[in-house]
Length: 232
Image (cartoon, rainbow, N blue to C red; front, side, top):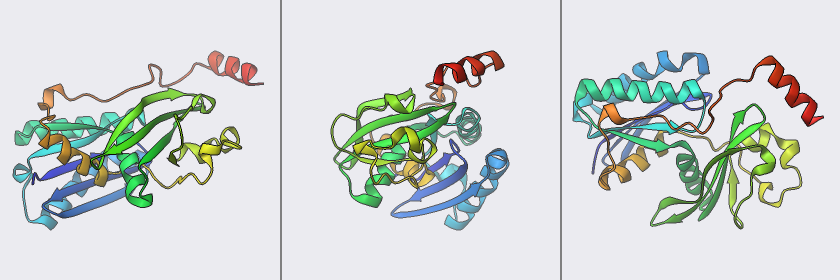
């Protein structure tokens, strides 16, 4: 089985994982301002714990997005730097895919709806069906207002978007019992990375890219005032 190093920094928690054989090593660090400083020390700890060096890995997986604009750039940039330095290919993993896998592992669900807070009164969301233990998007990742979330049939809901916009999701059948603790994590990124590597989906470091669903990362003061008026 391939040895996969994984990096995930798309949300408030930065995480790194090392999947080697049947064993998973991981580290976590909270605080969005410290992601770039925290990742490399965590990786060094993981490699030391496993008794290997970076070149012993087969590939580097990273949470490609959607998520925090700075966060997904951080994960991609660090993965590219490590990939170039060690001559390793990269595996871009969709963060919502990783959330879906985490939800399945926690709840045993075959149908999963992931909703991640995108800030600015919007959410990233997708719906998945599991086939052969892997998440298959039946509604691909999208960016919308909470009101735009429209699952295709029953699904186990998860993600911090439900808590962030609790009022908007109130009364929605699909939101009942949503697990807000399920978030993107490097452990699931590594697991999906191993499957992607086996399927031949690794890319050279130079070709790795973040996944952005939003063209704008901030609104002007005038635009924010217009939004307030329209919402009122």
